Structures are given as structure tokens and as C-alpha cells.
Length: 159
Ligand code: 4NP
Image 1: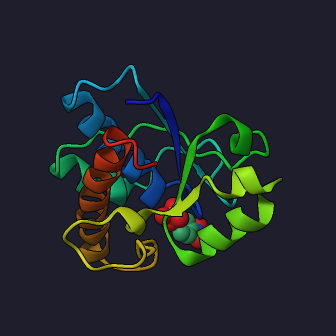
Image 2: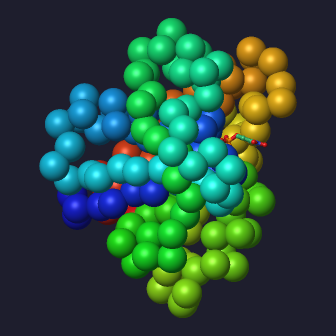
């Protein structure tokens, strides 16, 4: 497996992308691939800079076995050079990232998280921030499925 650096990106970096980070870190640890896969997350906005993930997201993640402890930060220009695979949670995040990429090589690092889905037929990870409890569980369902697919793709040198 080639060594990879992954960056998960959503809007606020307090719900979806820190969940993706926590879920993927656990999966990678279970696969014994911690030395080969480095993981961070970030937001297209800096609205929650320095904050822990949303408390509702943390509660739902904890129930499903994930401890979320990253601090929110916004996407930085150097991320496009430093990371190998950049994963957008929805179309809005995806288009912002594509527009900010400094060159074609960096642009080609950007994917939609749901490009890696295996079982669940979602084309984006819905923003749970203004919704109810079900939205937070759905985020975890979609991300568990897509993280599995992402790890398969990396292991098989597909990306
Ligand atoms: P996230 O969710 O992008 O999954 O972290 C949101 C977090 C905060 C806001 C919107 C979405 N907000 O409007 O502050």
C-alpha cells in the first residue's frame, strides 16, 4: 500500500468531517495501517475555529464507538500540497475545494466522500446541523460505509 495523507472536509468541521476522521482512524487502526495512512479534517469556513466537534455529534459518535476529539480548523492553501486525497462531504464543499485548488494536480486530489460508498445509495453526506437526532446517526451510517470503501480503494492502490 502506498503511504497516503487524507483530509476530510465539510462546512464547519464540527459534525461531518470530524466524524469521518474518527471513523476512518478507527478503521485504519483495526486494519493495522496506522503507519501508512495519516488523517486530518478541516472546514471550508472558519466559523468554529478551535472548537471541539458539536456536542450532539460527539454523543451520537460515542454511542457508535467513536471518540471525536479533533479541534475545528479551516482549509489552508498548503493543504492542497500536503494531502494526497481530499474528501468533500457534499457538493458545496466539493465545488469550493475545486475552485480553491491551485493547479490541476491538486484539483485531481479532490473527491466526494460518497464516491467510495459500498452499500448505501447517498450522493452526499447531509448536513445534520439544523436537524434532529436522526441526522447525526445517518451521518455515521453513510460515513462508516464510505470509509470502508475508501480503505479498500487505498489498499488496492485504486487511488
Ligand atoms: P458540518 O456542520 O459542516 O458537518 O460541521 C455544520 C456545522 C456548523 C454550521 C453548519 C453546518 N453552522 O452553520 O455553523
